[in-house]
Image 1 (cartoon, rainbow, N blue to C red):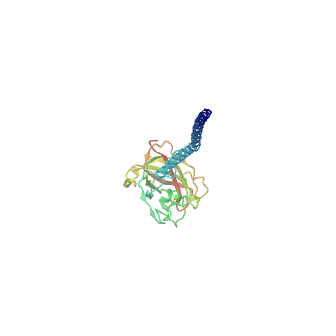
Image 2: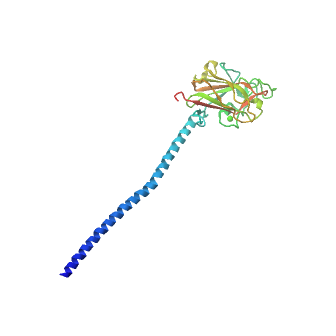
Image 3: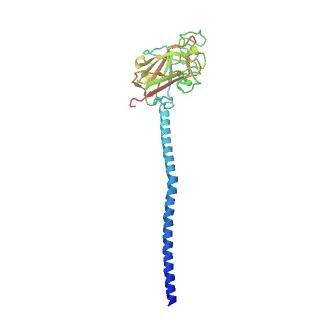
Length: 265
Ligand SMILES: [Ca+2]
């Protein structure tokens, strides 16, 4: 009899122990799951934030890159678009003023010619170490004069989206300061390319300083010039030199940087 009671007691104790063990096991499982979730949260949340930041960065970077490809080098901090030359033809011209027909300028050292190694595209290639040099009514061996190189310039048609020119910035040449432009005109056009030799195709949007008058260094950007009250968007732009710093047998400049905004902005 006593043995039966002992056996029942053992069974009861054993059952109680199993129940307790099961509770402990469940408790540990709950604690383990909680700790697991906690660890996942610690790792996952910062990672997610980092990924979001990276995506943001990539988005911004892509946007910037797109702007560069579409227009110019970069989107300046003022929100304007910088024209960046791609495959645009840049036409050298001479013997003209705003509103007049232009004559084509060819490579060489003679009258109406531009220096062969310093062609018009060098003015918009984004490189301060290249420049555009035109003799205008003079030649490379003629006497120096304030007239040499005046009424020359270039025009081009954007392959990218046309914009309203807001600012521009010119840069000095590699040589004598006297060759640097002092004043210029800028005209815009939306006419066909074949008509761009005609003065009537162009609309004058700027007549004033080059921003280089006080620059004493070579290959140096001058003061940014703003086109006040210009609201016209053009696909083509024509730049002409109307005066230069001093007496020289040509006019020469290393860059013309164009910055603008789109009409729908
Ligand atoms: Ca250049």
